[in-house]
View 1: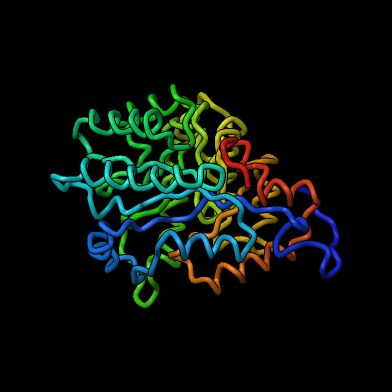
View 2: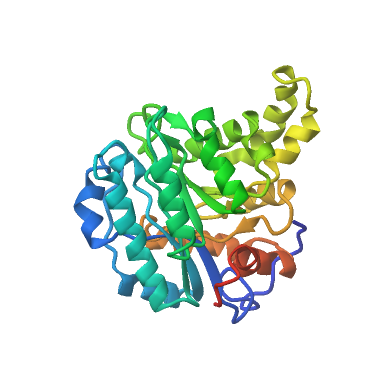
Length: 330
């Protein structure tokens, strides 16, 4: 991503080209039937469940010029292991599909999956994947960084990645319950969520998942958790583990990831991402409603002030997302 001097005040709308709509790939839903269930999972991550309904979400988008959004429901740690997990996931996906059916040009969704623990069969996972991408028309799937403490790069998830690859699916990788204790006084959502994202991404590369399944497009949330800063260190060290591949080959796998910018669109963060990722691999996200509105607006102002060329600004604002989700029409 090349840079230029900042635009004159008023030259662009907040964070992007004047009059152009945004595409947000990181908006959550909280179905009414899930609220009590979701509140069970807030104690270990350091946040209270926010208010949410379709009308307030629509107002949030319109007030910020967001013309389209990809919705997701990610509380995997709360339902993993429950006997009714499959039914809960189906109900959530049906709810998202109904929202999209009411606004098909404005909304798409990432389907949730009933992920089992290590060693459990994957039949229910693959069945819901087939239903969601086929019958319900989901634009992709949302996956947690780990399931019951096991990261997604573990060999037990290989059949899932193989099917996602066969379908050329888009995967939104979202952190969930951290696998390690939070620092005292520092809520997990502030630090450990981004570390979870980076740890999972590194394992997906180190275990060869990204290299074997190159037709899967994986979006890392929250600016990738600093991956751009550590990818070279890891890539050039991995030949000591697997001498059959060079550091440059490992690095190429890291560059296959996509990254969305929720709560991470500062100048330094964007500079790191733009120096590392190919054009079209950086997308806009807000993390609404979990991210406070004032935080969303602050990071949008950082994005507004970032010295991006118009082509890159347009790509981050909407172009990169529309290439992945052509059914959206902001």
